[in-house]
Image (cartoon, rainbow, N blue to C red; front, side, top):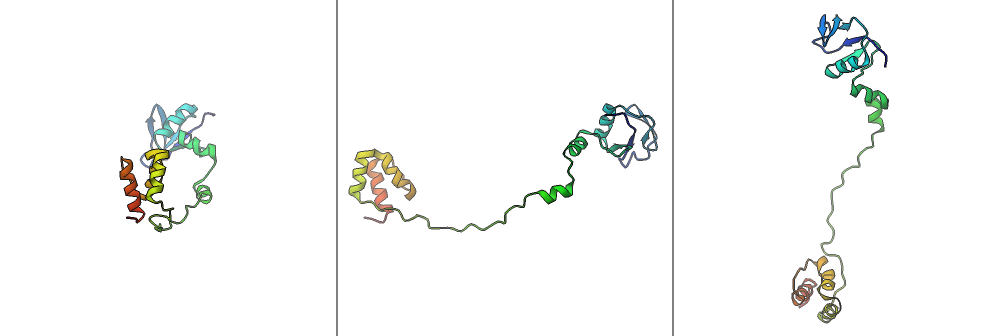
Amino acid sequence: MKPAKLRLLESTFAGYTGVLCGVEFVEGVSTKELPFVDQQRICASMRAETIEGRNVSASGQFSERHDISLEDAIKTEAKAPKIVPMERGEAIPNLQKFTRAELESLADAEGIAGLRLIGNPLGVKAKAIGEMIDGIVKAQGGE
């Protein structure tokens, strides 16, 4: 970046005359062109811009690099979908009903893990096979 004069925009320094950060200002404008590093330092510490109207602070450079204004950002921003109230469905879907004999046969073949596949959707939890079978039968509305 090229050297440039700075204009202070901060309300308390807009008409400042004196030395600030080692730079002489008259009526809020630097008397000499400043190296880019000094421009960045002053623009980062207070509202200021070059005489050409550029804010050379890191945030100013970021906004220029992406070349987007607030109005453009609002126009291109995706709209959020409308909130739809949640509707409750059936607590327990229509599941296949098992007889006690079928559950005992399943327990012989697959153990308690097989029974848990049936019992979990029904909210049945147990540590023993017998308790699991009793719980499933009861949850299905049997015995």
